[in-house]
Picture 1 (tube, rainbow, N blue to C red):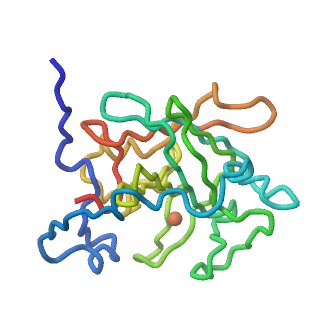
Picture 2: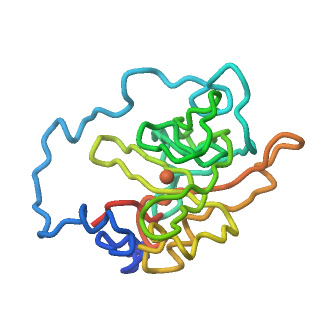
Length: 233
Ligand SMILES: [Fe+2]
């Protein structure tokens, strides 16, 4: 018999988690209000203004030279709760450079910018739900959440479904990162089993000889094995 694999309580981030200080200001303090969807929410916009080019998914080829750092491949699939592929889904990523700095006006901590690395990319899943990025392994960066606070190395991802209100946002981490237990962002997910879903796995079959290590990271949109996504009620 086909059943819907209901998610466990505690598999998604806690909206108000005081150790992650900015959640205290942005978490809702009142019960949510159900707003009826209108045509504009249900139909778009989806893919922005420009077509997706090849360099959009290869963050090492977006400038004249090679970026500094460890080149990596990040690939996987987008699937539903039964493992069925989700094709033609826009995946965007953004991340810090190898020296742990974002090319962003709000990041002014003393680490170098890389003129050959912007840290933003996008791609679309194929018919089997596969996606693939080439990028640089990001560094661990300091933040001002608490004393001596450092984020584990991570890559931010956004997935667009068929319309704007189906956008999902999450972060991917790397195996064996010693900073994970000290990171209130990932620790805001109560269940350890769910937290582990945000850690990519090293994959020799994705690794290309004498060129780049491969990390696998799948997105499961809902159900018992759903990926933790930010801002989910
Ligand atoms: Fe970040």
